[in-house]
Length: 154
Image 1 (tube, one colour):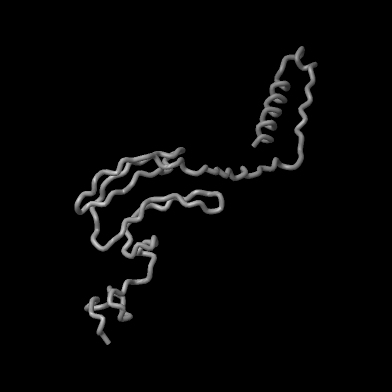
Image 2 (tube, rainbow, N blue to C red):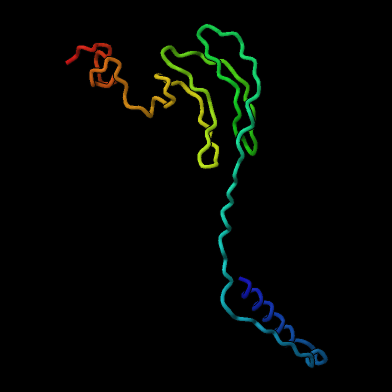
């Protein structure tokens, strides 16, 4: 692209000199177009952004317990280009489930947020990533068991 522009300018300059008057015809000009290897373009180096750990949790007054509700404590979240504090709030309780609080975990110098959520057995692993439940332990997952609470099924 750069070479084409230089060539176009030089052709325009030479044609302008050819139509000049006699006084101007005595003037000479030399245009040199340099040829060589094409310019090499290198991709930009990847930018690695390393965020520091979240700030320490803020002190929050936990309200009195409410029947049928679970308290989600306040926590830091990464939004945009900074950490933002989200205050605690109430959610409707789910009978038979344990609420996992949102938390930050460090892996190899990088921080990852594990969101909160409901967990049936309280082991910290979301239920969707566990093997199918078998309440009566008869070897048939609950979703395929016609009577999931009958441990005497054969």
